[in-house]
Length: 255
Length: 255
Image 1: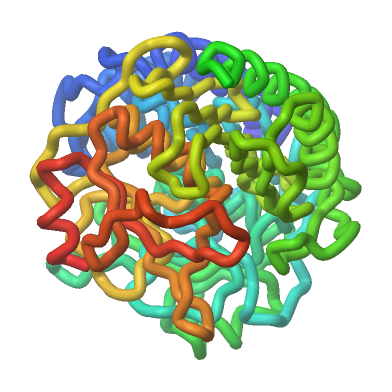
Image 2: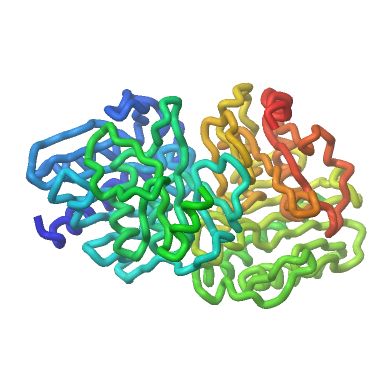
C-alpha cells in the first residue's frame, strides 16, 4: 500500500468517526457498556460506534487489522493497528480531549511502520507521518530543552518529580503527538498493573510513536530499551518514555 | 448589588474575554511575558488582554476588585475576586481547557460570597451559582459515590493513590466546576512550595468553591478545616479537598 492511499483511508475514517462520535459525546448513552473488548476492558457504546465505522472502511482493503475492541481482523500483508477512540472517558463525559489513532506497517514489528495518523476528534487537529511528521500539514519537531524542570505528561506520578508542570489529559495517542509538536517536553507512562505489566497497548501508542520519532523524539522503555522490535499483538503492554534527545538520558536517570 | 446584576456583569465580561482570548490562543504572541503580576508570577500577554477587558467592565461599578495581575483595585463595598484567565499555559499553547472565574462577596471573607461565575472559554460552557448551582442554566450536583476508587483530579500525586483515574487538565477553576457537576468525584491540591505553603490563590478557587458548595460538595483544607473564614487577600495560599459528602472523610484519611 502506498503512503498516499494510507493517508486517504485514514482521513476518511477519522472524518466519519469524528462526526459520529461528536454526535453522542457527553451523553449518558455514550458511556453505556455494550460488551467486553478483546483487550479485556469494557467496550462503551461510543467505542463501538467508532470501531464499526473504522472497520467498515478498513475491511474494503486487504489488511490485517489489530484493534482494541475486536482483536485481530483480516489477513492482509499490511498490518493496521487501530485505536478508534482513545480517551473514551473524556468523550463520554464531554471533555474535549479524545482522538483516533491508526498506523500502517509492512511487518509484524513496530519498526515496519510506514504511515501513522492521529486526529484530535474534538478540535479536528490532524497529525500524520510518512517518515516526516506533520500537524495540520505543517512540519513539527520535538522540544530541544535539556532541563528536567520541564512540562511533562506522566501517568501517574508516584512521588515528587522535578517537573515544572504535570498534565494528564486522558488520551495518550494525542498526548504523545503533543510531545512530537513541542507543546510538551515529555510523555511518560510508568503505570504497572498487579502483574507488574504496563497499561498501554500497541494500538494506543504505535501511531503516535511513529509520529514522535519522525519529529525527532527519542523513544524507549523505562529501562532505555528500544521499542521498534516489539510486535503488533494484543498481549504487549508498554511502559514508555518519549522526549526530545537532549532530555531523554536525563529523564531515564530521574525515573 | 443584586444577583441578577452580578450575573449580567459576569456574562458580559466572560463573553468579551472569550472573544479576545480565543483570537490569540495558541499563538506565539499569547505566551510572551509582559510583566510580573502582583501575585509574583509572570503576566503573559494573553493574561493582560483578559484582565484589561474584565477590569474595564468591573470598574464601571462600585467594587473592590482583587485580581491576579493587578492586585487590589477600587474600594467599593462589594468585593470581586477575579481570575481573568485560569489555565494560561493551556490557552497560550492552544490546548482547549482554560476559563475565567469571578465571584462577588458582601464581606472580606469567603463566607460572604453571594454569586459566582466560571466559564470554559474554549467551549463556552457556563457555570454559575446564586445559592443554587447551574451548568448552562441547568441545576447540577456533585457525585454521590463513596468509593475512593474514584475519578480524581489531583495536583500533583506524590505517591500511589487508590484512585481509578487521575487527571490534571490545568485550570483549577474549571476542574472544581467539573466536580460540582459530577464529571469528576474529587478535586485535590496538595502542592507545597519551598515555604510549605500551597499554590492556589483566592481568585483561582473562590468562585468555583461557591459553585461546588452549592452543588452539594464538601470543601476543606487537607486537615479538614473549613475555608469560609479565609479572607480575600493576595497572600492566602490554599491546599484543598473538594468532593461529595460521601467521599470527603474517606479522602481525608487517604490524604
